[in-house]
Length: 303
Ligand SMILES: CC(C)(COP(=O)(O)OP(=O)(O)OC[C@H]1O[C@@H](n2cnc3c(N)ncnc32)[C@H](O)[C@@H]1OP(=O)(O)O)[C@@H](O)C(=O)NCCC(=O)NCCS
Image (cartoon, rainbow, N blue to C red):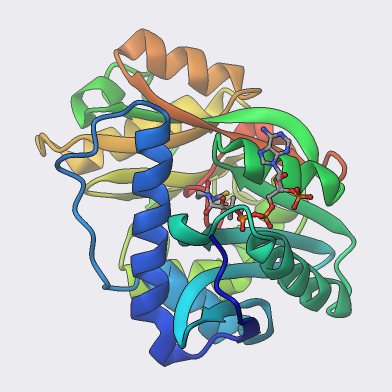
């Protein structure tokens, strides 16, 4: 059921807790529709660091829908060069199917196009309404994005690197060198994302190859996640994952690694090492870009 009056406006920092709550409700409802057990699904109104970052860095691309004075849906996205990416689109389950999601999507996209974006992309949930909306907005399925789960011990089954591993910092020189590799693999730079990862997420980053040819690869890792990872050749990815496994040590926590389905080296390597598929999303884009056979995403929000 749609409220009688629904309006949309740019999101503000004080909307973030309500946005987070709507996200939780929409995801829990989707999981229930998929037949998953949601009895222990906890809801909270603590905005995630990426939600805050997106609003701060690209304020024109964050929108909320308001009904009966409440936030009932929101969209968030980013632009890197000519790429517009839809990071979040969620509508309260009580008011889905009433055109709110489509309107929020269009607001976010229009802001991206005004910033000069030409390519559109998203990591879509399995929700049919979402995938239909994205296809109708010019984005078609390119490959699945698998969320794999496994342990640091499983990463240590992968081949070790003989080259030197170096710890990466947030200096200008490092951001430039990371960006050179991003341009080759990802198709564009994403300097702000690296600064965010180092300064706010406080995740660690290792790189291989300090030669004049530039970095051979880098990998971010934290207690529960590995990625993004970017490598000049598919094979180097396994060495980077091994290095992350070594650095994480005996920590028994389950790690999430978000692997493009066309990244055969990592998909097969991790499954052989004992990782399991937790779920998969669908990467949809208006046209192919990047070399995703040598890339691991940070997740579906910042890619
Ligand atoms: C995806 C979501 C944001 C869409 O918001 P919404 O307000 O329900 O969407 P809208 O009503 O604007 O549009 C949905 C469209 O999908 C269409 N649709 C729904 N199911 C469909 C199907 N199986 N096949 C084709 N089209 C379908 C609807 O007909 C509608 O189009 P119409 O208005 O032209 O009839 C919302 O459903 C949601 O929050 N889902 C759960 C969370 C999620 O998966 N978010 C996406 C994260 S990537």
